[in-house]
Length: 491
Image 1 (cartoon, one colour):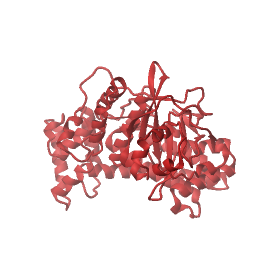
Image 2 (cartoon, helix red, strand yellow):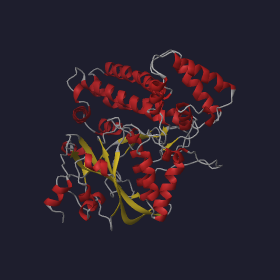
Image 3 (cartoon, one colour):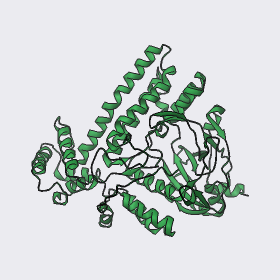
């Protein structure tokens, strides 16, 4: 049994505000203990920032908490209820294999969710076993930490613990529990759930909670619920633009996977694009390409429209006026996204100010990249370090003309060439989680029990803008293959 002294030494400091919301929002349930938990990886810098003792988490008692075998004092485990449009089809959902262990108050006074993923059945499991396999949990750890290092808002991974038990999918796979840290797990789907199955009072309680937790500065606005909608739209416009700028493909942008906080959440079938192509899809279940790279901004707008629909009763007492307010707010998303994206593209090209022709300069480059199947990340790296000969674009008449236009554009700004180069260095990562490198790390870990490949990959990905010599080997695209790369949800 964990003693108070051990709990204190670990640093858990829970205050569970979500558990004080209406009981229909969640089900109180404890994690299901596992046979023989073993710590695979612990995010030591993240643990320290949360006010947690690395040494205590690595102890037997600490590992048992991360596995779900022990519940630390102050925790209030619960499975959240939510709904969602999955590939456009609305359905009732909920935490089917995850539990919110509690809300940690950090030494800086921040409130973050501590969630166990793969911790057993819940009332929302819908016939599933509530477990998770080691490979997908390590994948989430790698990608979420890479996204954080890239400067993209994201949930983070604190630890992965092997359970010592098999989970049955197509074959028997080693089981694992991931500890996820998030600003919150409030989703568009959370609001859809309450709007469809709760009362108007419930919806107002949830909206007020979201405002207090994520947008306290607008809580006193005349129409605070319209302000809530507008703030979520702003955060998603910024987030999706950052996805596009690094070639990240989420893979399953269902409304239950859009966080109100503006963080990237759910790393199931995600991947990074190598060759630039807006139609790129990796997810094995996205047969129609609904969530393709080029569609992500449009899907985000669609998801936000569903959020607005859920908020309609709060926006105005008159239905027609509520709809108009919602439509006006949603209509701002495309412009907000585009401005974020174009601003980011300017920095990737070393452009420090704005000219009307900048968009055509960017578009012409991307069109060339698509035509010649250029590597997205490495093309911008070649431009950053003035080595265009390293790209497949080099030697083509289109690129020669474009390069001349680009150089003329840079020459029209007051900033020096050195300043432009530095801007590009901090905007174009030297490395991304290349899919073949991620698979290599997972294969070594899951099949051979060798975690050194993953640890080396994580180290390289932790400094994506370092542009150090040792990163060069991780920037190499995969060898040509007749088989397209496919990702899976990992459920």
